[in-house]
Image (cartoon, rainbow, N blue to C red; front, side, top):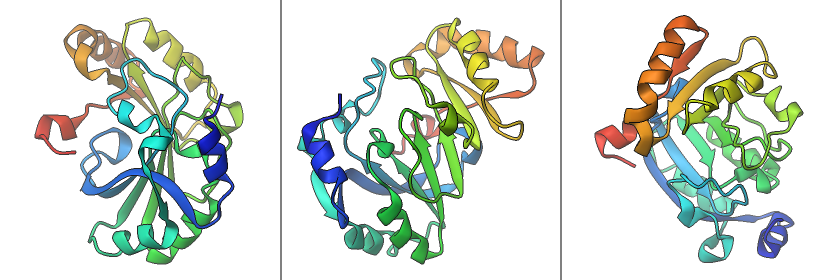
Amino acid sequence: MRDPMTEKVHDLQKEIPVMEMFDSIQGEGANQGKPAFFIRLAGCDIGCVWCDVKDSWNVNDHSVISYQEIFDQVMKVSSPNIVITGGEPLLYNLDPLCKILKKSGKTLWLETSGAYPLSGTFDWVCVSPKKFKAPLPELLNKADELKVVVYHPSDIEWAEEHAKKVRSDCRLFLQPEWDRSEIVMPVIDAYIIDHPQWNISKQIHKLLGVR
């Protein structure tokens, strides 16, 4: 069930709850290694046990920021790419936020579990489905990138089930859960050798010691 505060903010047209904003590099998936300005929205009801940003879950712990203030921060950085992530960003109607961010002339990337309908206009949509809350079929069909976190070797079979639901041009990634990399990386390596439609996503921002 969504947090009541989330529902309240969801109805607003000029502001949105934000955990943090920062300039860094994209450490995962298809755009790995590219500079990006991250807008991490607050609020999530997916509840992944291995989530590394659990502080984002409770929307009441974070400030509500105006779209204009977010835009002003975006214009202060040189990165040509903006990542809207969370939490689960699609808890909110992202149309007004994307509308103002599009004025920056920068590319907009979305990171979502796919559990809620798509809102906003994006240049790249990464769907990282979670077993804790199933992704919507219509959202999977809009994915440019399917990135599945592998916590247990059986997650690869689960990943294949979702790969059948995305477009033929969607890029496919298997990403080891950070704390279990030593256990699952050999399994992922062997699987990708035999199934070259998949790629490895490694969290290089953690390897580099950046956010």
